[in-house]
Amino acid sequence: MARVLRSCIQSLLKLVNSVIGMAGLAMILYSAWMIRVWQREMGHLPFSHDSDYPPPWFIYAFLGLGVTFCVITCSGHIAAETANGCCLYLYMVFVVLLLMLEAAVTVDVFLNRDWREDFPKDPSGNFDLFKNFIQTNFEMCKWIGLSLVSVQGFSLLLAMILKALGPHQYYDSDDEYTPDRVPLLMNAPPYVVDQRYGHGPKNDAWTR
Image (cartoon, rainbow, N blue to C red; front, side, top):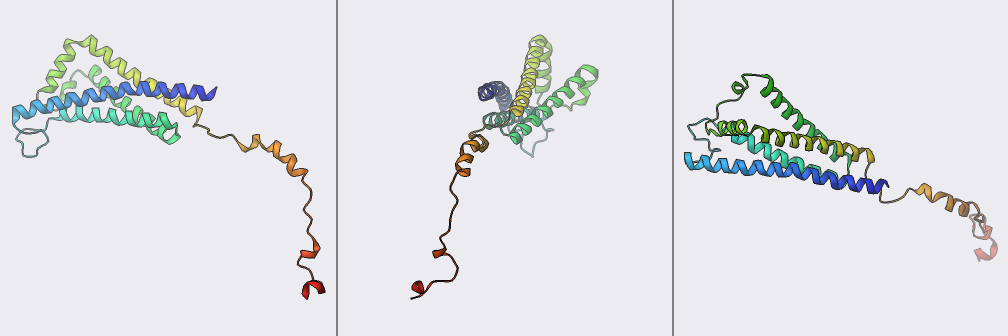
């Protein structure tokens, strides 16, 4: 029963974790589009050091967040497949840190009226476009954000349950077979050493 439950939780964790991976891929694709727009307008990539404009931090942040989501997804798939304690602990630490970051940003936006001043000016203008898009489609973005946070929390719960169940057991303990072997060992005839082949004094015939 425990083996079937463990397999179901592993499959469910992989499925839920794939949602985080798809969100990360979407962020990476959006970052690639922003990089393409920057290169078309500025004539160079945003990663070049000889630019006269300040670095487009929003592109960096969005790309880094997407890569982080993908790394968490990979670690989650490895942890779900192996059910290893260290992998599950590492995955849970990643998810908890991500949730703390999202909670900090959410609290700053909703409780701080001057939250726009906490972010530096974005020379690419993508931050303003993204902000206007969220304000225009607030209900849709709110449900998408809540769904993503719920998925992350659910994956954390599944990882904790899988850690509590423990790793796979591919063999049974030797204690189950000890009662079958002990009587055979106990009833075995004693081993008698023939004195003729011992280490005692040798007879005359053997000497000759």
